[in-house]
Amino acid sequence: MDKNKEMQESALFVMGGVEASHDGMQYGVPKKFRKKKADKIDIQELARQVRAGSRVQLSKAITLIESSNSTHKAQAQELLQELLPHTGNSVRIGITGVPGAGKSSFIEAFGTMLCEMGKKVAVLAIDPSSSLSGGSILGDKTRMEELVKKPNAFVRPSPSAGTLGGVHKKTRETMLICEAAGYDVILIETVGVGQSETYVRGMVDFFLLLVLTGAGDELQGMKKGIMELADAIVVHKADGDNVRLAKKTVSEYKQILHFLQPATPGWMSTAMPVSSWEKKGLDKVWDTIGEFRKTVEANHYWSIRRQNQTRDWFQSMITDHLIDAFYGNPERKEQVQSLERQILNGQLTVTQGVDRLFSDEQ
Image (tube, rainbow, N blue to C red):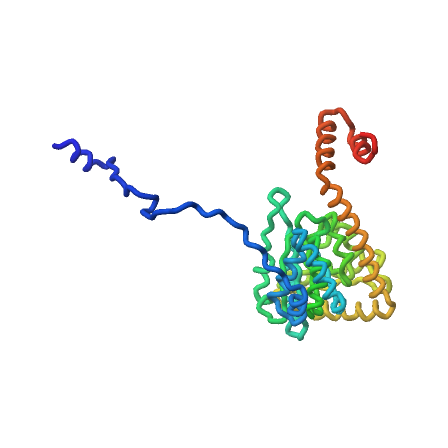
C-alpha cells in the first residue's frame, strides 16, 4: 500500500488547513481601543425626573451618589443640593437582627403591607462585602419577589464596601434622594448584628431589632448595646408550633427592656411577636411606629434627633476627608511604606513610627 495513502487512513492523520488568516477572513491593521467619553449629566433634568418618580432615574442618581469618581462626586453634591429642599418628609426605619432572623422576609412582608396601604416604600438593603475580593452578592432584591413588583416600592441593594456599622458609606445620601423622590417610608436593612452595627442608629428615626424565639442562649450572645438602642424588638417567625414559645420570648424581652435605659427619651421600648409567613403582627409593628412618631414629635425629640444626626454626619465626613487627603498625598504614601518596613524589621515601635510620621523632623 502506498505510504501516503496509509497515513491518510490512520487515525493520527491531520488534514491541512486553509492557507489564510485564522478563519479565512483578511484582517487589516488592528484598531486602537478608545475609551468612550462619558455622557454629560444634566443635573437639573436628573433632579426633575427623580422628583417626578422615575425609578430608573432614581437608580441612576443613587449610582452617581455611590461613585468614587472625583467628577461624579462633584456632580452628586450638586444633585443633592438641588434635591435637599424636598427631603425630610419620610419616616426612616433601621432594621437589624441576628443572622437567620429573617430580615429580608420581614421587610418584604412589611413593605408589601405598607404598599397596599398606599404608602411609597423604599428599601435600602446592605449586603456584606468580601474582605478579600471586595465583591458582594447583592441578593436581597431577588428574595423580595412580591415587593419589587409593587409600582410604589423601590428596592436598592448596595455593598457595605468595607464600611463598619452594617451600612454603605453613602446610605445617608441615598436616603435623602429617596425622600426627594416621594418615598414616605424608608427601610434600611443592615448586614446583621455585629460590633459596629450601632452606626445605623445614627441615621434613622426608629430602630427595629429582629430576634428569634428562645431567649435563653440568644440573650447571652446578644450585644447589650444593640438592645439599648432598639425602639422595638420583633420576635420573628412566630408561627406554627413556634407561637407559644414566641409569646414566652416576647415576655422575657419586655422584662429585660424594663430594666434598660430607653433608647428614645419619652418612649418605652417594647417587644412583639410577628410572623411574616402568616402575615400576622405586621400591622401591630406599623401601629407601634405611628405611636412612637406621635410621642416623639410631641416632646420635640424627633427634630432634635435629626439635627444631632446631621451634626454627627458632618463630623464623620470631616474624618473621612482627612483620611482621604492624608493617603492621597504620594509623598505621604511612600513615607508610610518606609516606616512600615522599619517597624516590621524591628527598627521602630509602632508608636515611634506614628510619631515620626506626624513630626516635622524625619
